[in-house]
Length: 146
Image (cartoon, rainbow, N blue to C red; front, side, top):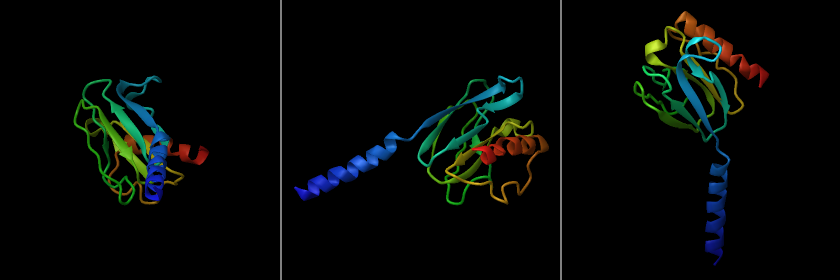
């Protein structure tokens, strides 16, 4: 009897945590609401561990993938195919840099902060095209205001 009660409480605790997880939808667009070309909308998300990001191929020719070197240690890498709608559950706290590979040089990037985090000092190590870096920096300025 006690084993059943303990098992039931453990199951309820696990399910209760899942019930609070959010799903965020991100549109992959040729043109954003503000007229900016080649964008993810929204371009910045503040999430919690266990939240899911759903990338929607609203316009053709885009993908969503985490940029190598722009993800927390121990986080899972994800890479969607062109025109593919993908869902990613982020369980590792940190900052994720997401790109559309074909339009990376044009600045098609987004940032996801999971948990209460700061931008790592080495986030911009490696080659980052100027337009992409400009957009990343603008998005990550949100961390200071959240």
